[in-house]
Image (tube, rainbow, N blue to C red; front, top):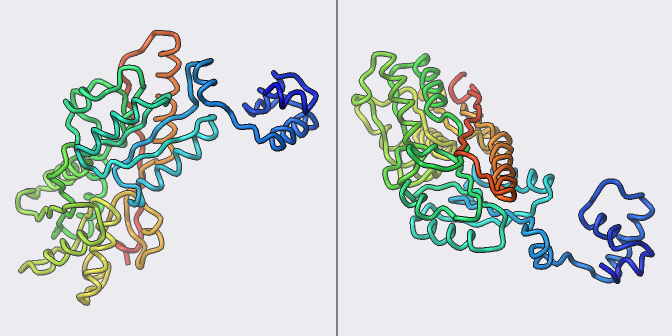
Length: 334
C-alpha cells in the first residue's frame, strides 16, 4: 500500500479506502489510485487483513448438489448478495452424502472464513450438533430440525405442500405424490409429504389409500420412472404432486411419451419454481419459495452472529421462516 500511495501521490489511508471501495473518495483521486494499483499489480493481502481485523471477508456456502437448478439458483443469489455486503464466497458441494457432509463442514470451518451457510441433507441433528464449529458462525438452510440448537432459515414446507394439495384436489380427488426420500436424515420431502397428507385428511381422504412413490433423488429420471409406475396402476391418478420441479418435468415427459395429455388427462405440479419449469410445455404449476428472502435472512443472521462474536455476546438461537407463493400454470389448468 505504501508503494501504491507513493506512486499515486496520496496517503496509505486513501489507498485503503479505495481498496475497500469506500464511497467517499473523490473520482479523480480514485482514478489515480486505481491506475497505481493496476500498474503495480497490487492484490489485497488477506492474511495481513485477517491478522489485523480478525476477519477474512470470506464466507463459505455448502450445498448438496450444485447441478440441481434450485441449489444453483440459490447459490448464485448468495454470490450476488454477499458481494453487495463486501464478502467473497467459497462454495463447496456435499453430494447429500453423510461422510462428505462431515468432511465439508469440518474442512470449511477450519479455514479462514468468517461464517458458514450450510444446507444439510444426510446428517442427523446429533451429527450437526457434534460438528457445529465452536468459533465459526453457521447458519442452516432448509428444513427446521426439531430440538436443534442453532440458527436456521427455511420456508414453511408443510403449509406450502398443503396449499398445493388443496389446489390439486379441487381438480380431482384421484391423486398421487412423487418424491418421498427415505435415504436422507434431513430432507424437505418429509415436510412436503406431511403437508400432502394433512390436506388429504382434511378432505376426508385416507392418506394410506393414496400412492406415495419413493425416489432416490429429486431428478428428471426419477420423476419419469415414478410416473411410469403410476400410469401402470389399474386406476391411474388424475392429478400428481411432485415434491420438486425436476421430478415433475420428468413425470410430464413420461406421461406425454405414453400419449397422455397434460393437464387434460393428468395434471402435474411441482415445487421450487426453477427457471426450466417456467419454459416447459406446458408451463409448470409449482410453489415458489422466496429465494432472495432466504438468502437475505441467512446473511443477516450471519452478520448478527459475527458482530456478536466480535463483542463477545452471542444471542439465543434464531430461526427465520420465509414466505412462498403458489403459482398455478398450464400443467394443472387447460
